[in-house]
Each structure stands twice: as structure tokens, then as C-alpha cells.
Length: 444
Image (cartoon, rainbow, N blue to C red; front, top):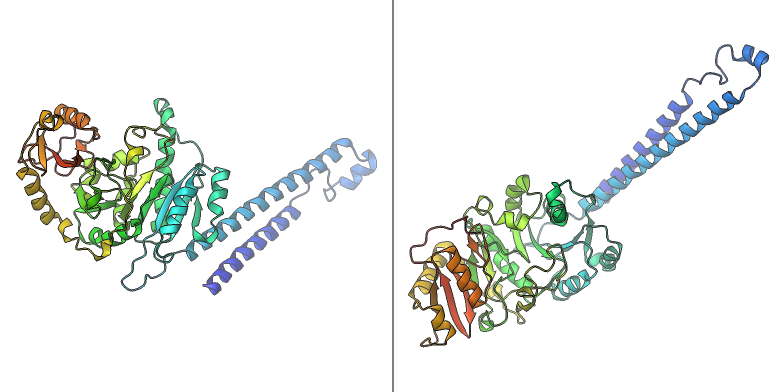
């Protein structure tokens, strides 16, 4: 590695010196301007006319232009050397061969202008079981100096990358107010290319700079990586439960995991193969909603937990706090360690899970919202509420206190149209009629 690095630096230096030597020779070899020494007839005219102010101005102008050209070329060569050095540094950070049976899963922190990224990084570093198996890569956009200083303060504990294109994105006039969403999408594309193409990792967990993680965050993703790799019906693993507010989850079942047709984000893992599929058509803006479209999801599911393994503390952002005050600030963060790598997670396999899940849902007694509201339910087991139209789903979801929006027809946390949550200590299934077959993208 040292020999390769030395050769690259030597080649860069050689090119630098050679280029500037050629430049100097070219400048020296330039034909003299009219009236300069060496021009035919100069001596004869000089004897008769003598030097003029115009001659002096021409000489000074030529010298100034030569100096300006030389300065620009030096700056160009300096930038070339800096790029060579930067690329060499990134190549040295390429993922080493993982220890036998222990895959490397980098954590990519997407940062911009929040100095509170410290809260996110402090928790990741506190809980990280291995720096070798879980390298932390912070990709910063926005060029915010204070945030850059905060990230640099961690030294070698994190890898700090800076998104080089800080310009505004050209957008339609009516989309100027969405400029932030365009920049975020551009940043994600650049950062994921760094992880998968430049650093050559095979998987990554993406964490925004306003997320705090649970004690078993690393254990969770380490345990689910084999499932993601082996099951083509999965395309992501998320640490987030959109309806995971306190009182809407069962903290006694912190080990419970689900398949979901809704892309949750907010702490999620993907493989290089998926990025190779998505990158060529990556959207200019609103990348998360784009991920939820049928053309991208292609019938695949994500894994998500009963109790969230991430918590957002960032009320301010491009979304201007949408959903934060009503939902996100009340998400319950798991507070105890679950040894997922020691558990049998085979129940998450597609066919096994679907049969078991549908049996549990449609064997639960069908009740009305009035029964739930008035507490007229018998026993303590799960119950089912049924919706058949978009409007009936939204009314029930809103009255029950869960998120009522749909993306391409898929409700948040939904699996085969079913949304599951706790209410007053009882499991509720908000479900379509038996025999459900597909989502209706017009329900959005």
C-alpha cells in the first residue's frame, strides 16, 4: 500500500513539474510583440524614433498577462494534486476483507447543518461493539463550518466525507420552495456512491443526523443482514415503526419483528445490489416517496420492529416539522438489549410469515370502532376492525390515533393492507376484508 501510494504521489509530482516546465518554455518561446527586442527593424526604428510610452505599455501588458496565465496554471495544477491526494485517501479506506463469518456493515450518517449531529455520533460511538465491523462514515452536505468542526472533532473515530457540489439545483419555478428536497436527493446519491463504489462496501445502514439509536441497534442490523441477503422478497431492513408511539406498541415484545410493504426509512439497511438497481433512475427530489412507488418496491417488503430502534430529535428541517409534534416526538425508543443474533428469525421468511400473519389477523373477532371506543370488548385478545375504502381507512386510523396517510395506496406499517398496533393494552388489526389481493395506488 505504501509503495502504491508513493508511486501515485511521485507520478502526480512529476506531472506537476513537467507541466509547469513546458509552460515556462512556451512562455519564453513566444514570438516577441511588435516593438519588443528581437523584432526585425527594431534597432533601425529605435535609433530614429526612440522608445515610446506605447511600447512600455505593451511590454507591461504582456508581462501581466503572462503572470496571470502562470498563476492560473499553478492553481489548476494545485487542484489536480489535491484531487489525486483525496482519491488516494479514499482508496485506502476501502473495505478490508471481513473476518470470517463477521460481515462489515458501515453506518452512513447523512449530515448537513446541524451541530447536534454530536448527539447522534456520541450514541453511535458509545454503543458500537466494534470499530472494525461497524465503521462510521459521516457524509456532510451544505458546507456548514460549525457542523464540519463538530464532525472533525471525532478524529479517526469517524470517516468525514464532504459532498463537493453545494450549488443550487435547477428546478421549475413552482418547485423553488422544495430546493432542500432536491439537494437531499443529490446528497444521498453521492454519498451512497461513495459507500458502494469508492469504498467498495456491500451493505450500509443509513442514519440521518437527527436520529438517536437504541442499545441493540447494531445487534438488530447484524442479525437481519443474512435475511436481507438470502430473501429476494426483502429489499430493506428498517429500525423504525411509524406507529411506534408510547401506548401503541407492546414494550414486553421488544423482540417482535414484522414484514411491511411500506418503506419506513429513518435508520435502514440496503445492499449494494439494490443500489445498483436504483442508482441509474434515482430521483431529483423526494427520494423517500419515490421509494414507495410500485415501480421501485416491486412487491418487496422491509423488516421493521415492534419497538423502534431509532428516535428522531430533529424538529427543524426541510419538512418544517411535518408530523413531528403530533407523532414523531412521542415514538418510543427501545431501552433494553435484545440478543437478535441468538434468536430464530426464520418466521420472517415470506411464505411462513404471510400464512401465520393472515391466520392471526382474520381469526381475531371483528368489532366496530364504537366497541373499541366504549370499552365494550370481551377478553384480552386481539381484535380486528375492517375498512373497505380509502375514506373509511382514514377515518378509522385518525380516530384510533395512528397515522392515516397512504403512499401509492400503502398505509404506514401496512402488510397486505393490515396495520397492527396496540390500543389500551390490546392488539388491534386495522384490516381490509378477507381475500385482499393488491394495493390501489390511487389511494394516496
